[in-house]
Image (cartoon, protein in one colour):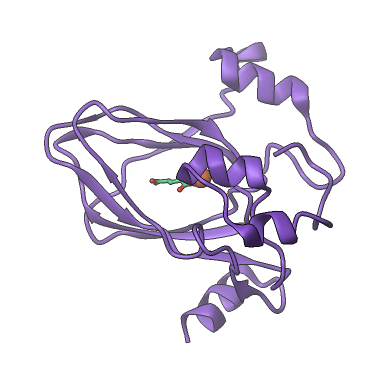
Length: 166
Ligand SMILES: O=C(O)CCC(=O)C(=O)O
Ligand SMILES: [Fe+2]
């Protein structure tokens, strides 16, 4: 089972496929000129599989573990959002995925974005995983990412695995 494989890779004990009705198994199709701005995910772990690379751009940029459940680390987050490199320290890593590549990332704790794509669409599958099988995105997060929130998002907007800003 893929969930077992992902859990073994992360070495974090039991994890679950995300219950979120919109975010549990999304595909992203980015057309010429599209980009995905800096953000954190509502879920903790994502597997990304690049189905088709764009002709250019579409770089996955990320700042690994820039925050954790105990520390928002707004100072460093601000530096990344402003494109600063204080003390010569580049907090941002860049990954140019190739068609067929698979990566695991911790999108709740690693600020990330996808740069502007050029030419043919960048197509990627993004199955998502969590430590809590019940929780889903907050309604505002579902709206921002997928354009709408469902009844389930409101029903389950009660407790969180952390108190981090979405
Ligand atoms: O397309 C990607 O590589 C990342 C997508 C992403 O960050 C997301 O769906 O939350
Ligand atoms: Fe993301």
